[in-house]
Structures are given as structure tokens and as C-alpha cells.
Image (cartoon, rainbow, N blue to C red; front, side, top):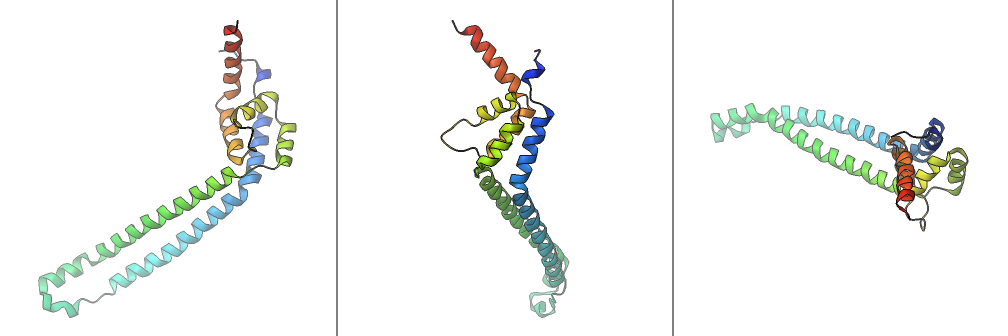
Length: 175
């Protein structure tokens, strides 16, 4: 498929969308990174304390259970505390991932101001604007950050050329 370079988005289009998205999502990225780092540091501190607590347990008071039972408790004690730490790590990771995904959904649903769209409209080429209009399928609602992110993805995947080809097909098949 041969494409006309005048109908293709430019590097300037990619840069304009990337800069606009960076400005719109910078706070989200910083907050998610900070929360993840703080939680990871706090959890590391707690894991160290949990394992140290487990190593300090004295089973000498359980001699009534028998020497074999006490020996088994002492032998498997570290594995129990590391398994508990691993289980808690998975639970905390699950909540962190849920937090980041929920935060990202909220950011993607956030409406973009008219000033940002005005600046993009002045910088984007006609093919890039066509892709943005294609992504923005329901014009009853304002453009969102998610729409701009999808526009950037579609520009990278060659959506402008696909739209041009679809228009050519439509023109050929229209009586």
C-alpha cells in the first residue's frame, strides 16, 4: 500500500500529543509512584520485623507436646513466617495494583479543557486531527485524557492511512 506523505501524521503531531498527555497525567504518575515507593518501604520494614519476630519465638514451653512436635515447630518456623510474609506481599500488591488502575481510570475519564484542545488543534496536522475526530466517537461529551491517549496509540499504529484507505474504498463503492 503506497501512501501519500501529506496524508500522514508528522513527528510534530506525536510530540504535541506526548507533551499534552505528559502535562495532563504528570500528577497522577507522581502520586502513584510516591504511594508505591512509600508502601514498598513500609512493607519492607514490616517484613523484616515480622521475620525477626518469628525467629525470636521460643517453643520451650511446648515440651508437653513431645520432643518430635517441638522439633518440627522449630524446623518449620522460618518457612511459616516467610510464607506469611509472601501472602501479605501478594495482598498488598493486589491493593496497590487496584489503586493504580483505579487512579488511571479516573485520569482517563477526566475531561480536557478547551485551552488544551485549542493548543492541540493549532499544532496537529489534518491527518492527526482526523484520527482525533475518529477516536472521539461521541461528540455529545467532551474529549477526555483517555481519548488523547488512544489518539496517540492510533497515530503510532497508522490509523491515518487506514482512514484514508477506508475513504478511498467508500468513494469506489459509492454509485
